[in-house]
Image (cartoon, rainbow, N blue to C red; front, side, top):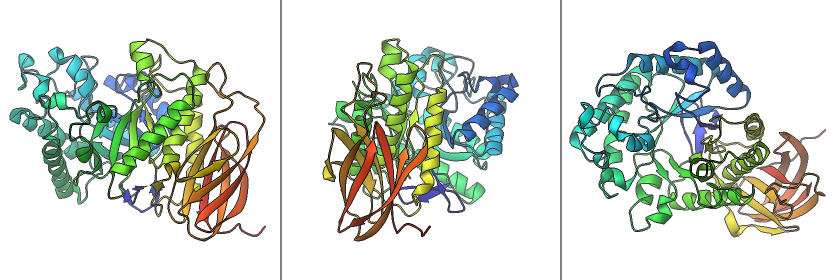
Length: 464
């Protein structure tokens, strides 16, 4: 896997987009891998994911919520059952054409369940407290030993997409300071890249994730630089749990517009056009703190809206949901939404697309609709959503009378463009027309009832 400007491409140079979600080796759909309890069930599940348009799973090497999924126990001894699990998972993902975004530590549950963790000095490890995880010299050696094991065993797999070298890097992991984040990232990044290159002649893309609200909670700390602009990292990622919208939704539109705004802000922090993606989002406050599982129809629409807002704002793919449901899996409706996104993707040349977030630079007239868009001088992606038909249940009212919208997009070179309208729910094209740009591309969008996506490319319609 390699970069293609603002997006990703395979080793053969073909566009590749991360469509997927967060999973865990102890959650229902992958749990059958442990001690090979249900290999056929897991293989069938992965086949269904592929059929649903999924290309990528984000996974932690261990999941520390439970005590029997540690990757090392004690520290330095790689648990045979877990090594077998990962051998099998990489093999099955290779078979299905799926890829893995891998992060080596579950830092959330590791912190909460520190008393049980193998790196705890009381359990034979080297670390006295997780507040020194990023700065302890002996712990750094242990981290690198884990990374080396993974590189030597699985970095040669075609199912390996990229490294999330550190899940939700946090000042509290460095005694309240973010000053050393850059040096920490460089040390791990350089170690992994050199080892992969020496063994395989190439290295995988790398990122480090951050819990997105920290950017607002700690504006006095140097967080943006290491996350968005670190010279050793290949793409940027956040976990988008915006308070009051994404983390606790009361309707299906406000969270999506929050997603679009945050993606736009993130792209504004990036100076070299590198890819950006949300690698965790979802109703975490509703689920974890309020103990609420959202009604499935509402959650399906919320998921679909967030996905299209992420893509149209300039993110790579549709974002990666943390399920936050009971059971802890995505719904069939969410899988249909991923299939719709996957079928839309070939309408854009992602390899050549050098997107910029268009934000409030657009001009829109018509009903109370919101537009999310990104573009360069020859292509654009747009998502339009109604705001005047939100019902009492927080969803867009079914059967609302369709309305047209007039939209003008800046930055597209003079000429003629082909515009394809996409029904995000049904996953199909609904209109195809030509529009002209004089520096502003003027679009008369056909009537729509709820939301619609647009794929725009320079060129004319083929003769019938």
